[in-house]
Length: 306
Image (cartoon, helix red, strand yellow):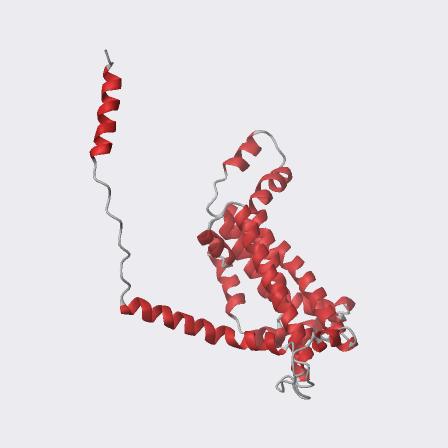
């Protein structure tokens, strides 16, 4: 004799067999408004990215001037290797961006952790200050930085502020510091402090807790902030034009000066290389956050400081 359990299993199987097969789901027809918005979105993206695509294409121009297409070639890229002025400008920009990214990462990480782990009324005041730094026009920052750098370097006699690399690095790190602060705060503000409290209960020193727990939790955002600060510092044109000194001309200022004699294909070639570096940095940011377990929405929110 079959047991009650076996009987129930047989009845359930028979019920599944008798259940009619579900009809294939029909694809819902898209309305004309959805199609129109989709086409409009594609047109907007083309409008935004078409100039960049044109610059990338013309970087392979073998002619003497950028606007005159003479044929496909790699002459513009080979010219970079034989022009000391271009090499110097690119080297200054890369060194400046690296130093500025380090400064912004250190200051922004400490600020972001402080805002996330020590909430209070002061956080909103500090966020307002960071927002002011973010929305202030670059021309205002540049005009304010120039006399300040001159005052520190000449009036107070602090010689390092007479160095072009120092000036460019400090000027480029202002906006980047605010960006890193937003990213680190967004990473930590939604995470509990249970691990840090447990570390303190186990008599770990505050510095040990900070290094092994807090900093480890924030590390994906720290790396993302560093890469974003590096890319943002590469094209800080207005501030760089004001605070630079002779002998340390960064790449954006070099491009501006080249407009007087006509843009050449090597300008587009270096711009293409920097575009590729920027895309690689952004891809690394997304990869670091994805490996940390973030979803696509969380990655976008962290990168924008939301």
